[in-house]
Image 1 (cartoon, rainbow, N blue to C red):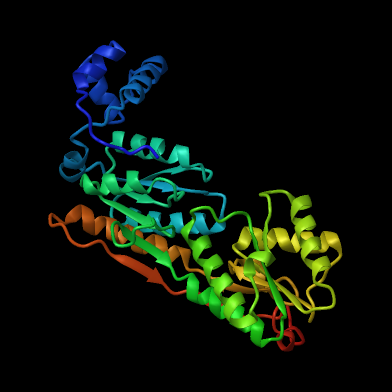
Image 2 (image 1 turned 120 degrees about the horizontal axis):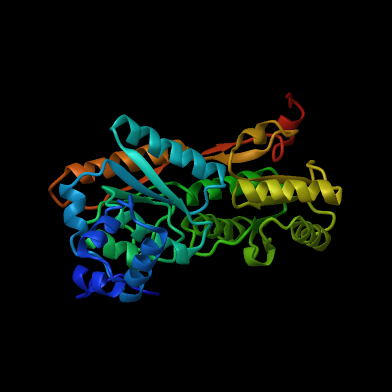
Length: 352
């Protein structure tokens, strides 16, 4: 893993290598691209990358020269969770007279550092990061250099190092598994598009494994299914595998997030399976359609808007404060919304 660190490269050396003036480099670093050709911008960008140049005055300028812009990095903006999160951030920033400049990473860890550096070069006043989970050292280094930074939803492995706002994942997942156990489901499959280092997914999987071991006395890894993103054929294959390996039993599926749940529901329709007393489905997230699909889908609701709001509030406190204080870790509660997909008594009373 590449660690971001200071070096002794000066702005003059960058200017010489790029064959432009120091003033032009300064204008580039401040995001002032008027009258600067695309070729010049590209050449400067390449030199900065080649020399691994990072302005030593970033932290100082963040505190003393307000740009009225907050930089925001979103791991995957296509998720409804992320778009609502960004709305919460934007609403607070707008009410404080700030704009939000954001980058979408498409969950690509290699893009994360590049996008953050571009934001810093644009002299944003602070950073709100929905991290990919693979650049912990880099983020900690930025924080230690004095850059105001808040993590949202996804955490780094070292809790208590960077301000973080997330939601509670472990206990609510365990509660959902207990609900399935108490309603007579004999085996539960865990469907995911990959957990990687995405902290919420990791915590949900850990809770699932614990519940399978403690409640069902089963090895949850044997009932874990990795599905390929945007591949309905693969999801259908995995669903058929689970069903065929466990005939004549009451089965349930726990989906790691809303995208996965939607894929599983589509696979069920394609394969000819229906939600019934012998096949239940639940998981994250409680998006609008969950309560509309008969007989109502049991889902865990996350208030991603509030996550964004709280993160933005913290970043403004950090920008305004001249004192260093211990990083905060806020874990907002989630809610288990039980519906007919896991409770037959509710299915009988289902109404659109």
